[in-house]
Length: 587
Image 1 (spheres, rainbow, N blue to C red):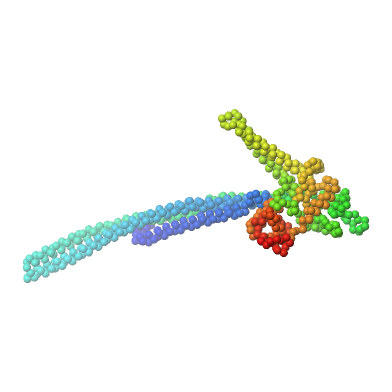
Image 2 (image 1 turned 45 degrees about the horizontal axis):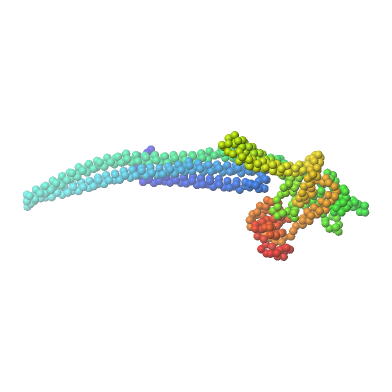
């Protein structure tokens, strides 16, 4: 099966077919190119998706990812990032192994096709030229034969006429002989050209054209084979990354299997455990004997007025303050039933921060006294560990400087040992500062550990001794949870207990009544309130204004009954209500 013998007369159709084959190959290249673009776009979208859900560094969200389920989610995001990388590999391999290779091959194919069909056209032109020569020789031979025949007839006519002179007859005879000779020459020339043309035609149809068409056939078959190989490469590029993609998926499954619900539950306990003991039983108040009944020890107002020596709540909570009881400051108002107080305690949310004593944008107290005991202990322990790491780092630096100084002493040409004295003294001073700082936090840690209910009685006594020697500063923001000496249990006399009840709780819960809204505001930008007393807002969010800017650049706002705080005034557009109390302007 050869195109040269079977398609010897289909030159134009073969030219069209080979051009169609090149067009198909270019179309396939375009298809692979668009596939690579899709793979790159998909990988980019996967990477952006993974990055979007990654926790932000140094944010509260990052702290929440300590749970195993969240860690598994982070692992899933990382695996998806690697998964996206494999799609980038697919794109790169297809571009280098298919697109670039086929594009170069198409250029070579076009050049080879052009050369083959150029040779074919050249052979066609040559055979056409030979055919034209043959036709010209044939016409000339025909013409000369006719001229010789007419000359012969004219001679015979002149020879038969008795009136024609002998000279005229001789002239006619000579002319007929000349024409006859010309016809013979034309015949010979025509015969020669005919033989040459037949030879050329035989070579054209049996040698030149078959060879050229055979080259075109081989070229087309190579194109077909090359396209098939490219399709195999297309599949192999995908198959090569399947094991790695499988590992990514296995990593996601492994991360899912690593989720430990018990561990997460324990982390929740560690994160939110306050360290308080549950309140004890409430004593029964006998209302059947109104003339003889004694004032309940649980009434905060009567405890302050009478100064009774025994203030207890019964059971295990002996000597422990009731942290969230609201005291009625009006001396004339009848005391509320204790059941109402208990219901209010059970349904109300404890206020951890008091906004009266909180500076705008204020920072956390250094000793973390605003936190419950267990959380405070964790923060202090974390701080002690950080300081110990810094001390170790400074000590390593001091050792390195000391070794360098020894080298300088042994080899003065390498440097001046005295030049390191200042740096060595500075490092030693830093170590001393860090040690003092560590001792301070360790003292606070020992104080807190001595107060935790889980600690033994000896630790409690040691903590009380430390408290008597080093009375800590009262922190206003923690008075809804702790007594003035920073403790969460009372080991002192009744007078200090009554003083706490009469002053700190009164001042703290005076602020529980929410301030009225004096207008509204719209957040112009997103603000992440990470400091105490601030509140996070989202761009476009509408909130209530409860205290306008006093000149320090902060405005106090409220989202709902439980969420309020300060935001930078420049971050919000304030609209004050003219009829509201305290409103001055309409912005």
